[in-house]
Image (cartoon, rainbow, N blue to C red):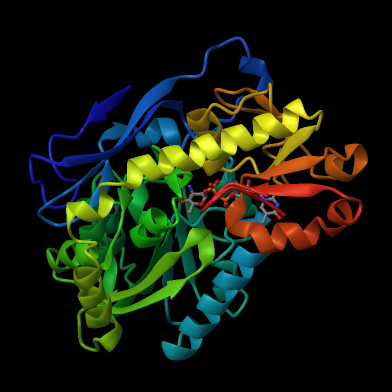
Length: 409
Ligand code: JHZ
C-alpha cells in the first residue's frame, strides 16, 4: 500500500539524511465513517529526510494518491473565513496586476470546492479547476465552477494545450507538496502556461515548520517541505524561474511564489536565497535537533493534558484537521483524555478521528456542554476560532494551544 522512495523527490540524489520519525500513524484525512467502524485503520510509517544536494525536506514513504484523495476525502477549503479572505485578496491582486478579463484563462490545480476560482468567475473571467477528490470537485461544479476531476501532471497538461487551453495564470495553492511526481507536475505547469503567463504557488515554508515545531503538519499527503533554495532548483530544471517570494502567516507560515519565464525577477528571490544560506537552512545541521524538540513538545502537551484530566477536568478538541490526526496519534492523546472533537465542516461531523477513534461533532456542542478545556488542533486558525468561541471563553472555557509550545489561554 505504500512505497519508499529510492532517491530525492526533486533531484534524485540516492542517499538522504533522516531527520525525524513519527512512527506508524493513520492517514491524516482518513476520517472514519461509522459504516466501517469494525475495520481497523490502516497505519503507515512516517519518516522525514533531508537531501544534501538540493536541500529538499521530504517524507520518504509514498501512499498512493488514489488512496489519499478518494471519495472519503472531505477537506473543504471554504470552512475558514481567514482562508477565504486570503484567497480573495490574492485573486483581486491578480485580476488587477495581470489585467485579466473575458479573454483570459485562470487554471487552478487542486481547486477543491471552488473557494478561489469563484473570485474570478464572478468577474466574468474564464476559469477551470482541476481536482481529483470527488466530493470537493462536485461541490465546486454545483457552485458553477467548471472542474475537471483529475490528477494534474505532464499528460493532462499536454491534453489541455492540445485543446487550445493555455493559461494566463495557473494557481497552485497547497498542492505542490502533495504530488509524488514533482518534476512531472512542474513540467505540466510549464506546458500549460502561455508564454507570458505566470504561476502563483503557495506552499507551507519549511523554516516555519522547523523553527516553530509544527510537526503535526507532517503527514502522508505532504510529501515535501519547501525552502526557496529547493524550489529555485526545482523550477529552473524545467526552464521556469522564481520571480517573486512573499511570506504569509496562513497555515502556520507559507510562501507565495510567482513563477514564470523570468522576465521580471524581484529582489525578494535573492534576499530569501541569501538568508537561507546565512541561517543554515540549506545544511542538514539546521535539522539535527528537530526530532528532540518535537519530542519535548509532545511530552509537555501529554503531561499538561494528563494533569488537567487527573484534576477532574473535561477536555474536548477543536478542528478535525489533518494535522489533528497526526498530533493526537503521534503524541498518544486518545479518548481517555479527549472526549470529542468539534469541526464546522459538516462532512466531517459524525465521523471519527482515525487511530484514536474520537468522535467529531458540531462546534455548538462546546457551549452546550462546556468542557473545561479545548485542545486547539486547528492552531493555524487560532485568532479566528478564539474570537468565534468568545461565548465559550467568556463562560470560563479555556483553550490549550499545542504549538510552538503548549500553553493555556
Ligand atoms: P486546516 C489542510 O490541512 C489541507 P489541515 C491540506 N492537507 C493542506 O495542504 C493544508 O491545509 C495546508 C475546521 N475549522 O485547514 C475546518 C472549523 O471547524 O487547518 C477544518 O476541518 N472552524 C490540503 O486539514 C479544520 O478546522 C473554524 O472556524 O490540517 C482546519 O483544518 C475554522 C477556521 C476551521 O488544515
